[in-house]
Image 1: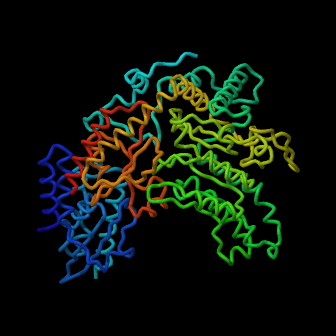
Image 2: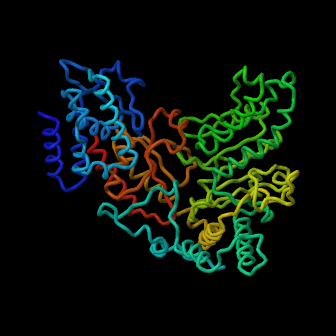
Image 3: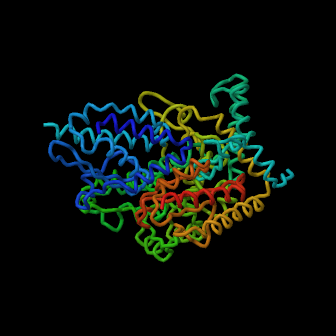
Length: 137
Length: 433
């Protein structure tokens, strides 16, 4: 699936719920399904700055595509990073760099997160873009 | 003055902010240790000041200025009486606890450590290098100013720099959050120049035995600063009975507006201490060659003070005094007992801070659940608590946790709210497990 198709399916999934509690329940489920980072990378070098809870992100390139793994000590945070992983993992660096991120506004995630968490979300996106930039050759 | 009967419904009517819905749910406000809500009388007092009385003080010859000056100085008297200071001049208005502590670290630090600075490096032995005692449960405001002040002194001293001396002496606590007074006594024997400790811990709720601790320090002629940020709204404070040298507090944690707080200091100390900031009302005579300073407390109040907030603080003090303090304390203690009992039934809960004497707040973690996640979910159910390290990171390190969930109470909270809170925590825990 393309990034756009994945984003559309996430928007559709989110729109099935009216209540933000249900959407949080979905994020929590996503957190539990997050592809977990290899313990050797669960250290300060892979920590994303700007998140109130700790979140580690690792990326590797296979056959021209980037695959992300992550972990966090907070499950909602883990759900948010997994949401981004679903969108970006298995995509080429060029596609990731070209991605339109307005789906985050469509699902209303940004305004429903606390300002600190919202900043954390932006830091995660930025970190993934940085990996894509470095691996884009 | 006859006291108001403690009627919770009448009290809640005084706090309009409580009567609102968030995310379609009735707000339950349990973040009172961060800041309390303000009663109507306080809001109206500050509003009235700007509607009818606003003026710069201590300088105008005109009517409004004189009235505002008188009102401001009356507010000082009211605060002084509230904590039983000997005289109104022993109260310095500041922006709050943090500013008061920074003032002390700078000004008292300068007074007590300047001699050491002048001593030659050869004479300066480890035993008489400047030291300050704090406790393991301090929030950053009662730790960082002292630490930075000591760093400045030590960096200017060659021997201390080489030895990398850590001159912040920290009183140990046990796993319940109770200070080790034997360790405190040992630290006092190292001849620190200042002791600065919290009356009530903002993270653990521990009520420290400050009267005893002050007396212990005084045996060694060491002045004691008490951080009263968490106690003013909840306990009767008598600075003469405590015999503390300084007592600092924030208005906004005791139903008063933000931007106002105080520093009580014994007059003999305040007179000796150099000014902290310069300009405005704090001067006596000024020329380009030399400036002499105004008397206490004005020499510590540089610039235009927050007069409106000071009047709001005075009204907040009168609001607190309008109740039987014992009755309010008993009511708040019962809230704490009830919340502890109800939360205890939650699987995997661990209370952080189990001192026998606690006040005003309850801090906890639940096994396998990040406090931040829990706070996020119960927020959506209308419950406002604080999660995180509560500006006391060393305390979190001690308990080896990323943070806690903290519920803190004020006189307007109810058992019904605690029921909603506990139900929300239970639901969130089920979701997050």
